[in-house]
Length: 524
Image (tube, rainbow, N blue to C red):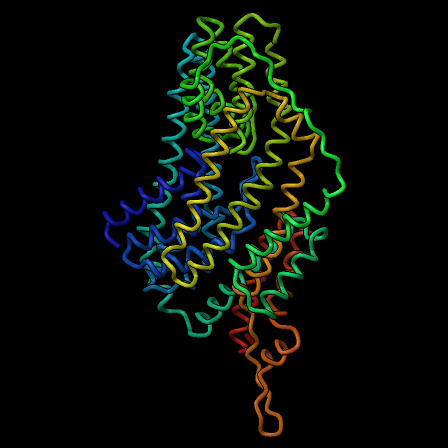
């Protein structure tokens, strides 16, 4: 690959990868969306779709929660696409390398997190020195460092790795190539097992069974199952609430108070909230990003030393889901506004309110947006991508963009208008848990469709009996269709439950071992 082509791809990858934390968190770096983009740039859209869709399946239940750094699906999806196309359009090459590449990306993130530590302490010194605006320059410096880390690592991987992978793959024996292909078909079972673990399989297993019957016996496709499961979830919710007494007139309106901030201020804060993760680090997590989003509001409310103190105060430890973050921003803006007007609201009260809201917003954000919205749209789009359908990236990104921007906009607006009353009301009515339960029903039934269609475990053993050939795989499927893929998923689920720390790597090794050994001994 030429130097300029490698540099172009590295810059594009850097821009896409920086989105995951640096700006927006709008999901354009997910494999099912970014893989086809890389494929298009390299002139092989079909391979980009297949690799992107398959890697999306593999990493479907793997999300960074809190400060964890699991194998990076985004980098793995893009680099795997590059290597698959560089090897002559062999998807199995990129798919087989996806997890090792994802693990390598951990170290890039850890490097960036440690650089961010130096930058946030630099920001502290400048703010304490009387320069409140330093929060802006230092956050942008973090963003630039993140982008540079990704571009450099991407360029080295593309420029040096693509040539090596091409020659390496050409020299592999046929049985090993076949083994990598079989392993690639097994690997989606890892993502499916992670999904079952995330969605509380013990409580909702019956809905997976229903999904199994619909897909394995009745051959229903993913879309029809998604529609049917939505109806089932709504029916369960309605029947469960049929005996509840409805209370009217119980809503309290937020008390009217003096206002300093206007719609323009909230819109500016909402826009700046897109950069909340740009300075993620293990000391204060999203603290600098929160202060950056609050800066225009604080600048309007305070002057001089009060402004410096307020900006510095909001660089404290802070962490929640990036989409739910705006709700806390709105609440905090309202509290700071009332404090600036002379109301008895202390700095400690504002910090305590932020801390108190982190838990419920993070819990809902991680379980619903990561575990349901991104997962279900990603699963449906990945199925289309693996079949080579170019509409797959659009099917994935549009729902995510709509949900992301609506949640951010109304989070800021409602948080500012109603403050903590909104969270209290949501807790009292238990609406969050009901919503998550309903979404889990949909997720379980859709996951069954994914296992049936995309986890490939087929026995190659053939018996000769009385002059007739009996294919063992067909014989098993005639009794329980697709039982082997489900068996692998359940085994992986057990491994992940019993070994939370290293389970994902154990299942990865098992996938390679099964695929390569199965091909060598001609069992799979």
